[in-house]
Length: 202
Ligand code: GDP
Ligand code: MG
Image (tube, rainbow, N blue to C red):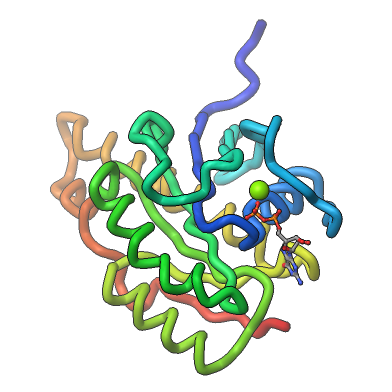
């Protein structure tokens, strides 16, 4: 069968249970929201093909099926991941406290090989927004706010992540070519402040 895409990106959704990972994924893949979601069991991943710069990019997005404590997620799960969405819910204090644990977990296994974003799902609270932004700066990862329910910024979050992965790949390829530029070094640079963006939300 003919290949129907130019790139295949493996993405992961991680974060505490109940923060809205499955809803975010459902919003992105089906453009729908179901408030009666009970459990993730049975869903391993969703696929959606998007187009960027005239190229078809197949996104294979893995949802942690019930193993949402950072310690229980194995290295095998992270293997091959090109991008991670670390999701949390500011109304859930525990999920906020756990952010650092999640980041540490990611750092141990794959921070150098993949691009990481963390997204705040569900709410917008100014004070917490600033705390989150500072935390993102501290770890050099990007921060975005989403609402799976109100359909805010979910599409944008995945497209931005995909775009970043693509440019990282393109830069890498360029660096490997005989005429390659030294810009390849850019790959491991932390995200700059200017790349953060802010959205007005719920
Ligand atoms: P997961 O355990 O991280 O996969 O979380 P779920 O996706 O199953 O969502 C947990 C709960 O949060 C569900 O009751 C959802 O209806 C609710 N939820 C998810 N996203 C949103 C959102 O953007 N806004 C609001 N208000 N509730 C949400
Ligand atoms: Mg789930």
